[in-house]
Image (cartoon, rainbow over all chains, first blue to last red):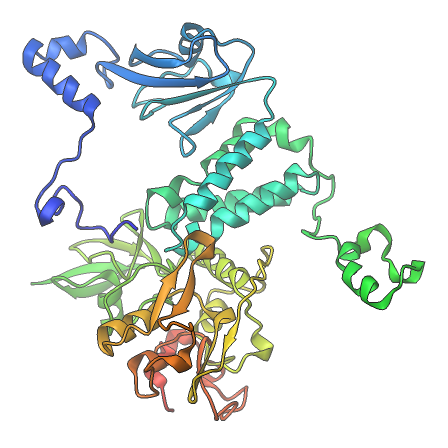
Length: 252
Length: 237
């Protein structure tokens, strides 16, 4: 479990001493700058994001693998490089990153636009995107350590609400509830995992509105359970199955 | 060093090393909280004391006070976020206020009232949890545990017994008893332990004295939690 911050590793890290945590990519860039000067880094990329980025591209494309691209490359250009076609969506920066559809493929891989640690997943139109997002949410339910309330409970509640919508029992109120829970998780979680764990669900709602709206019921409220089905145990115990033991329309 | 910052526009004094919560408590400003008890090291897990400090969300119990900080505590936005967190806690466990011996003296219930929470709203998880009545003087109702770890901290740091711990991860995190059998009766837990008197909800209850104070005359029945503070401060009243 992440410790309470402050102090941050910059002042109290390894053995309680000021510590810089960098990845290999940064060390390589630093070595390149030391050898060739800053112009070497600045000759590629954008003004705010100098240099290149390593992308790990996977999913529905002809040539998955590790790519080095200049910062500022658009998602459409990346998709072309890896020979992806009929692309429905990309998930950039991992499950906690951002889910983008074709309307956003003009956006750029850069700190000032779509930032990423390097993960780039491609999903073509044969994929069930709601299923993909539920898979990501399952991952976060499993990953939550359980320390703080918003992440521990919020991941499970959002997952259940999404399941309700996916199964055709949701309404616009459910989507609003997911976004409210997500906002609280983002603002109040103890660490970055909880702060970003709701991103797949929120991205799906915001970037793919038709995907979920098509499954919504046209009422303002649908209960999370079927009252008639809930009576099944009582019917079994009493040996009844006559019309009087049933609630019409699920009891709603 | 003495410094000053503001909470909802009110000027508050703080000493070096104090958190926002410490300084607020010293000045009698109520910031709702569940896992915090000034007798123990801050935990920062319930997140109910969430405030905005210079526009950034922080837990008041762990965030250090600093000169000129502008803290938003009792605003509509923060109150709404706290309601959502409280609703999460209510549906996570099995909290049946009307049937609970702690009703009226429960911090979860009192903070929920204070934050205008009217209903749990979210889908109840209805976890299957046990009641442990193996100890002669105390019972544990795991249904009501909110994982604040106050009993864990009190037993470990104050009583030197480590009777309690949290096991499991994520939504499966749960309170466990440190005995081979998992039963409180098989530990050296005693009524005189600090851990017996810090539970903010009705998870750890003394036996043989149910409903001594009638409902309607209990701590938070008489005054809101913002005026009387934590239930642990009123033990034995």
